[in-house]
Structure formats: structure tokens, C-alpha cells
Image (cartoon, rainbow, N blue to C red):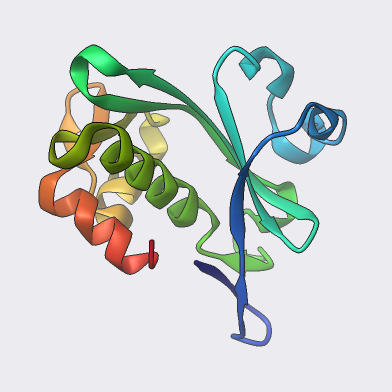
Length: 152
């Protein structure tokens, strides 16, 4: 699992970890766009490079549907848009959710999210997510492709 530094084109290893209570202090709206404290009721993960948090994701397990819903996903402000520092942050977080889906629900595992309208086509094109109306999802071969692409 790695991110690619855009300036040097070098790959840097990253890890996904559960968010610690102390992390909420540094997850400000100005850097991560949301009030992450409201997500404490969910499973919240961080993508880290050394000690720097590059992205954050909140998930809910829907056991009866064998599905993990990505409720909220954000990359740090300096990793958005044309001048971002690293590529592959969002993909790594989605792939981690896919890994958790397989771990908890086996071959029937599914990952879904409700994207902003402007991102719907982007998620379909870049991550192979399939359209389910309001939600996008990954299951079966598409989910396994994410695991292969992001080396999980």
C-alpha cells in the first residue's frame, strides 16, 4: 500500500489505522472539511504516511446486507485538486474498506458510498464503482480489482 508523491513520482508506503481519540484534535474542518467528532459512533480510519494523516474515512457495517458503507471520506486539504502532494489516498482508503468487506463477509462482501453528484462519474471511472441509483458500490470482481490495484 503506497501513495505517489507527485513532484518526485516516488512511492511512499502508507498504513491504514483506526483513529485514536487524540487524532480528533488535529482533524480540523479547515484541513479535513468536516466535523469528524460526529463520526465517533462509526468505525473511523486514517491513512498515514509516517505520522502524518493524509486521509480519513468513516464506515458503518450493515451485517444483514454483508455491506460496508463509507459514510464520509476526506483527504487533507493539501492533497486535493491539481496541486495535491500525493496521489492514491482515496483509492487506498476505499481498497481498505474492500479488504474489511472480504474479511467480515467473505465473497459476498460489498462496499458502498453515496458520492457528491460531481464525483459520481469520477468514482465510476477511477475505481470501477457500479451505479445503484443514489449509491455507488463495489462487489465481486470489481472489489477484487481494487484489492489488486492497491496491493491489499
